Image 1 (cartoon, rainbow, N blue to C red):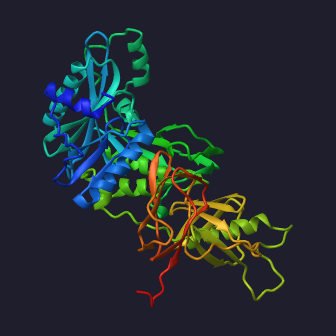
Image 2 (spheres, helix red, strand yellow):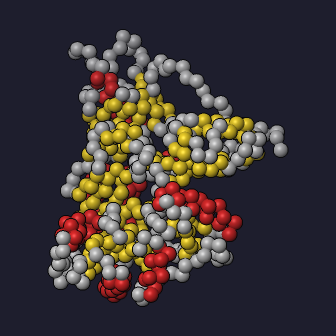
Length: 503
């Protein structure tokens, strides 16, 4: 089952519904999905809608598959639009018993990586469930499977097609454990020792939803983030599976997932409310994350209605922003409170006509706030906003200020009153957004490029990241070559911007 190509042939022979396999060398009809044969997780996967895009996508998919799995083999399938990704958890012993422990829906994905998973699926009827379980059991029995595994399908309407068998415990296994009241890891070990599964599969109870919390930057095409995680706390009656804690260093060498956050409740609606509240109340300091996107998905009407599919994030807009002004005001007041001297009032100054000011960076935007001296502590500031008394919790780590409130969370950088002089970059300089390896250089010195043209491709965290020209012009400097290691901030190329009078 480690080879998706071989697995499809084996499943078809066992009577499990499969999609036709397309030879990458002879594809003529589009859209298609390119997939890595040796692995998953979205690595080596590309959607191609037009023939003109196919060659570059195929080469990119093969490079990524080779990097991630050591095998560049890929294959193609017809792309099922608006289909759901549904999978069945199986557990099999050496005595011939196979459990089909419910289905999980994992349709909400970005870059073909699952970010929201739930059990049971809101789209699976009793009839579909019966057929899914039969197909998953047949798949397990056809290969003599032993242990925990997952049989994955694409579901459209009432029809489903085999995707793959994951011969391991998957990231989303906690939702199955919570709904069925089993410990899959414990059962794996017991089966390895020869234990026999009870004949009766455990009955499901309630609904569970899991989200994957990633360190990544939504303002820069979800670029993986690295650095120090100063504070990490998720409150509430939830399950938290995580390998990080306060002070953890998030490296560029591994997947940027920080944690799995899972809620279980008697109903789907209750599980959604519980999970969204826990995420909104979390303290995550030091790194940008996908937390806001996850909350917005959980609050979205289409998700609440169970109307999900693999194109969910493409079909719906998730561009909510948080007004940083009150957060900056809270940061200024809390910072001023740390400078209180004796019994002098907060913000006291001998030039009474001027109110205190503070400047912060939110992302790359500088904002300035003026504030009236008022009661505040270094950790908590209460502001009256729209007639509501709103608490803002403030934490500082050097020049980084993290502010959390019921209105959201904002990270700010203190702008010093007397900044040190800096050496500026040459106009048109393109810098590395993260540490990585150059896997492709698409231009040469002297080339004319348009805005948005691909200059080169970096590989970081086992994924490819395209570096694009920010403006039209001439490549006057190319400072890297294929296979070169670069650090964040290194200048990669310089594009001299085309002047308005140039044709």
